[in-house]
Image (cartoon, rainbow, N blue to C red; front, top):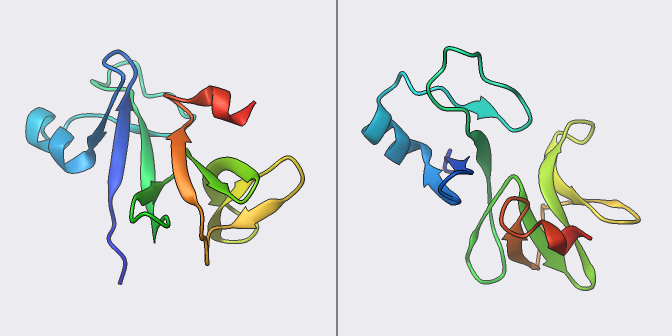
Length: 117
């Protein structure tokens, strides 16, 4: 069974936090929203949350949503592929599932958006 882990991006501090560390520091009342959604105005935190894919890259680094991965000469941002019911990434020419991934994490969309240009 895969580990169920999440991380959140604090844009003001420019840091990632694990969901466990946020709960330890802010309690269960902290409000985090899935990537791309807005938190209600009364909430405490409005940090995007990313899920662990259950996979690691070729160097043993955990792969999360919003990571930028590279395999061969192709790279793309990791996301949930609804139509395939799997995590994958989009390149300029195709959609690639992460299952069987042999590449590596080279960044993420928050700290390294230039890697997708």
